[in-house]
Length: 275
Figure: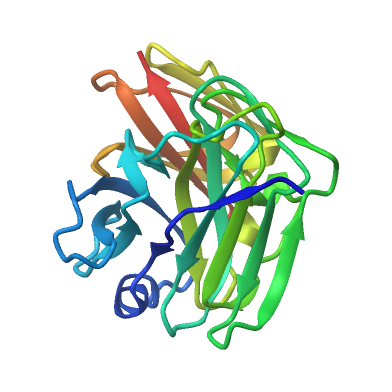
């Protein structure tokens, strides 16, 4: 077992968790758009803003920070030392439907210590996810769902705290690890059961603007929404009787998020860099 380095928690304050997440009928992804420069409250955390926006606030430990649409370690990491962080949902139990991770400094791999422990408000372990194989590759700048990494297909109910351990092996540090987004719901009927991203293929990425998405089968209706890193919708449209999407991101270079919705409420999510 490798020596572990405990970082301070990422904490979602309980009252905010209920306000801006509690009224979702189905799961929804929330991405990060900024953090305060320092810990002005003196409690070891600083505020984080999200997309969609919320009228309360999420707090993140000073050991973690926001950079370029994601959250990662703010201090240098030693090779062979596992990264650990906690997401705390206060006193309100939720279904945890998904999180999206990626590596920002070249390709890496997750190894045996990598796991997620889900606990309820009493601290009782609801479930523990470990890698189904000895390792899982993280391709450079390629977002991947924890459902894919851990080969899961269902949300975990009644979760209050999530403990995450990231193991990059004995010779690699975890400075490139990024938390891109997370999703929760009240009923567990959202992303975990309806996410069809893994059955589709988007290309090219990066792109100069033109994109294609192979859907894998024919759909009666597919809605597309494209947002930028500030959460602003730059385009939305609907296609019918289609098994392949072809469209252009007619906007400035940058990072964009694409969401697909089908007639059966299936969802697919992508992050694309436009050069």
